[in-house]
Image (cartoon, rainbow over all chains, first blue to last red; front, side, top):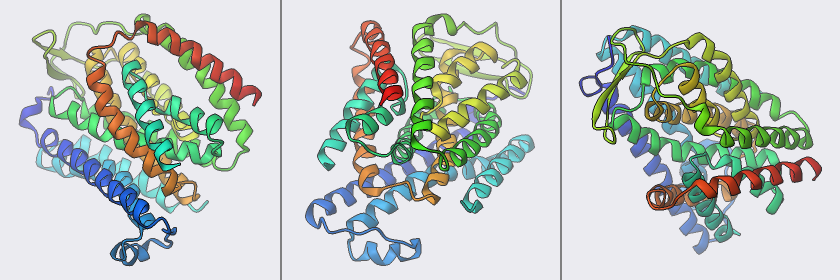
Length: 113
Length: 266
């Protein structure tokens, strides 16, 4: 069964996730860079759960940090849309491969260095 | 410093676009040799920049149907295993060892760039069966191109190596992926480049997650470089339509060899 791109969900939704994820991440970074010029005294925010508070207070480094996290998450969201689309397309082999990639990436998050 | 990093990102990305290579090959040596950034932070910065640009390029390839998503996701299993092991190893080794490996890889990349035209062969006549076979419309040839990727198990090892180098030294891996897809799997070059651009994003994520946990990602360093790279890739794609890259290619090979020698003896 050759891939006929225009008729499968994966070729519709995955590029949207990648394009908009990348643009949102870059937009957040841009806001962070502008804030950095206005308030240079940003600070590194850790742990991540405090990010929302720092974002609310327009902390420049928090915005930069969030932008980086959104960028890193973008291909993962793209992979998630591929996983969902593979269910709609009844492409079980693709579903298995997507699930395996998720497991590998999840293992990376769980690795304690 | 922010402005310098922003413009460096723009310049590096334009050069990368004109040469058809990922910015990591230029970005990491620039950060290490010119700005004296520790190589682990330079690699982490490069990986985030790769994610930012590859997302846009991959989206373009998918929307136009060039990308073979099934093949990309399948081969990504191997690049990601490579990237995780490469980056885990890299976060525990001495900076000098990484710089020496980077220098060695620069020599290999210079060789690939010199032999590029010989390394990319036209795909065989298309086949219409098989799980990974695909069809796309080539706007330059103005016809539908069908192909069936071949020798996929043989590509595993190359992808494993490409992924581990990406995780270790922050290169996109595209310079290895495209010849592997084109030469071994006999995927048409347009589809090979688009498929590779999807693969490098996910591979870079695996490496970036390891560097993030090891605290090598510095927002103040990454943000201006990434913004510069995103702007530069947009400008570079347009400029590449007007600029003849043959001499630029040769000049860059010399620059790569010079950079490799400098990294070896730094």
